[in-house]
Each structure stands twice: as C-alpha cells, then as structure tokens.
Image: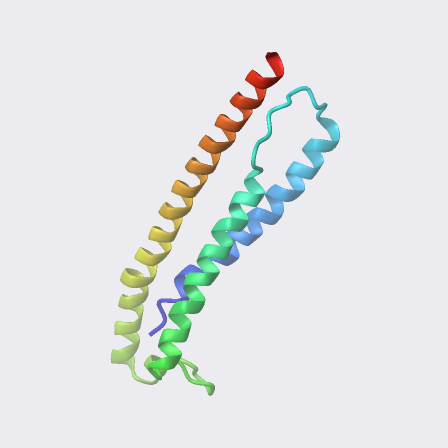
Length: 133
C-alpha cells in the first residue's frame, strides 16, 4: 500500500546528512595537512551508497504497488486512503514491511561499508609494504 514511503523518507534524511557531511569534509580538508598517505573512503560517499540503495528499493516497491493498482494517478494517490479501515491496514504495512525493508537495506549497507573498509585497509597495508621495500 505505502510501505515504499518508509525507505523514501529514510533516503531523504540520509541525503540531508550526506550533504552536511560533504560540507564538513570539504571544510576539514582545507585546514587539514596531508600527513597520512592512507586512502580512506569518505563517509559522504558511503552515505551516497545508502541513499542509492534506499531509493532503488523504494522505486521497486512503488512500481509493485502501481502494478497492483494500489497507487493511482489521482488524489488521494493511495487507494488505502479512501477507507479508514484500509488506512489502518496501510499504516500497519508501513510499520512492518516498510520498516523491515529500510532496516534490511541499512544492514546490507553496513556490511558493504565494513567490506569496503577492509579492502582499503588491505590495499593501504600492501602499498606501505611495497614502499618500504
């Protein structure tokens, strides 16, 4: 019914956090001296990954709801909004399905970040060993 709204809202919030973090990183790089040769993936880029994952999941869910006729092109756009009993069911679906999907996407993103960090640590370690020898 409207479970795609939960990951959409999370994507909007993450996008705002990403913009703030990107601005903070830009300000920090101007004042920071390059003393470390280690390459790291910035948090703003990782947040962009999460945004893309959430938007992708929301678009797929929205398409599925359009396909089944639960989302229409006319007001109120959600067929569940026509009847109070359906509205209750819609809110329950948002709380269960939407939240679990957004949570699962976030857990997958955390796994992606951990793997990416491990790969970067290994690459930095190999580069350090190569430069020392």
